[in-house]
Amino acid sequence: MRIAAFEVRSDERDEFARQAARAGVDELTLHTEKLDVEHLDLVRGYDAALVLGMVRYDRELLEALATRGCRVLVTRTRGMDHIDQQAALDAGVAVANTWYAPDSVADFTLMLTLVALRKYKPAVYRQNVNDFSLGGLQGRTLASLTVGIMGTGAIGCAVARRLAGFGSRVLAYDTRRNPAMEGLGTYVELDDLLSQSDVITFHLPATEETYHMVCHASMAKMRDGVVLVNTARASLMDVDTLIDGIESGKIGALAMDVFAGESEIYHESHVNDIIANRDMAYLRQFPNTVLTQHMAFYTREAVEEMVSHAMDAALRLYGQEVRD
Image (cartoon, rainbow, N blue to C red):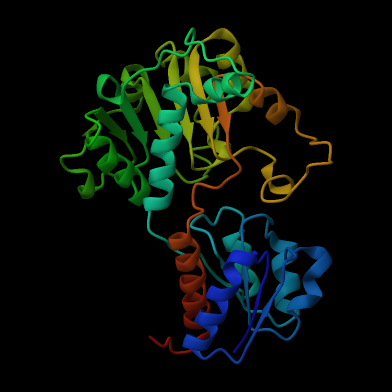
């Protein structure tokens, strides 16, 4: 089996080599480029492509992959919303995502929550100019707050387990109840979670139903000074609503690891570039907003799992036995 991997970072290369040797892959080629229209010919003659989430694989792109002989597409991400799965089925391209333990994102979610609650961003800015005053930096303890968890899959449950150690009251909402949440929180209706939570953290996929869940209508149901944390998908939140919420004080703090239009910005250096995303630039300048570069997943353990599971998924879809 011949596999081509794209958007490969330096931290993945050793793990790719280990996994290729373990699995007995005939040929593995690593590319730093994205598998987009410009680089389609790089998959010609390869059986499978392993990608990340910075390219939208629509019908045209998937059909182009198929015509070049690539019949397996695996994304080294949990989410698959960047792949048109019906178009892949029609084109005869088998697709899969990968899996990694929820601990990396859950840890990061708690970190962002604490950073927001303890006003770490303005504190660091002050120290950089030798201002060690305390005015305006008073925070809140998690034990005194109600935290609402939107989405109780593996990551949402992992966040709930961590919150148990802080003593927070935990509310949960999902269209399907997860037995793993037993004893970790209380399931409530959506409006109840919005109206009763001091902190709301989001762990939902990007779907038509979840698109812009945070909008002016839902914001009106939230508590004044609510803290919002998003380590899931940018499409869950309407940016105009966020800006209005910050400016009016309805949102007490905002922490986001994802952002609309991030695909051409995040995970690359733009030190000498103009960032053409006005919403991102505007939100970044507020003292009570924290924007990180889609890195909640980024730990050594998660990277290794993403590579190994992606390799195994490609082999299974190709019909080749996976070696231990």
